[in-house]
Image (cartoon, rainbow, N blue to C red):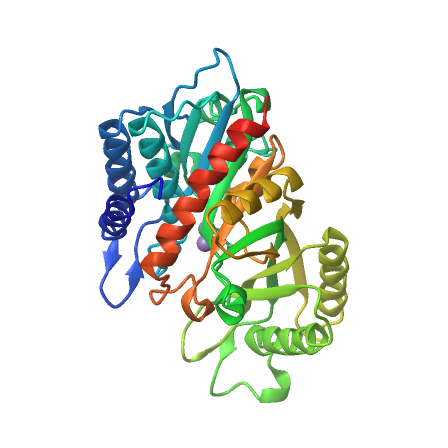
Length: 397
Ligand code: HGY
Ligand code: MN
Ligand code: MN
């Protein structure tokens, strides 16, 4: 092995303890104090490993070791350090700590890289008020619309900081990201490494159903404008249609009622509809179908406001091949597959050749306190990432 598996696993578990709440999972949202503590831990480990470090204008963390070729574009490897509420300890941090271990091992063993190697710990990858993959989208120059002034203030962001975090794609030759699969394909097939060929697109919509708040006891059922019941009716018609398709997935993860009192007929129901597909045209078709259902509401009108659109991306074939060579060099079986989850590699694919590596998720579980991957799978992923970095160093000029 090129890496030190014990050191890598120990760092990953120490990082996983920062923000971990027993019985609940991770509490480490972007820009939280736990996030800052986790980032400081990683930055310190980077510096102990001899990497130069910096934090950019939106809070992304970077570490860097130099290459032998003056002015050569950098290989970047990493992932994100934030977690969904109640999430697991490997979604994101696996890719950051593995990239750090690769850099340390390469430096310690005096392996002469031609290209500089940069380790990225991206911020705000998870869906949230900033739209998800925020840190990597800022780096890739994909933030078309500034967050609102109160969001900027809430997260201590500035327009200047967002602009300053933008990187010229020419300063990179490629990006590699190790990540847990967050699905069950690898486990079911008994294959230890996946090579993603593409990453789904994600679109999200803020849906509002307007009814009329009224007394929950005295208002006759036939006279109610019950926003909750109307939303439930809309969603049951929608999901019946969704079940006739297999080329996209959708989720309603947030729903709120106003005024939200047990004895009041809900006057308003608001929810977030998320649609994902490998094909952007399918996302558009599905959204149009949802809008048609929403337009056909008898007593409680519904509005559908687009809030996020991130198209799907193909991952670089030359990096898929490089990862495959890294696996065969270590006699590790692998399989190419799409990614149903989104990743920072989606942003990075807009400015540089980008590739990913998956390792199995036990039971396919993720975004849950029960997220788990066997230590040998974690270490194997870090080893493949390290070898893929060496392959990339030979591949790119
Ligand atoms: O939601 C996702 O696909 C990713 O885990 N943020
Ligand atoms: Mn992730
Ligand atoms: Mn995630």
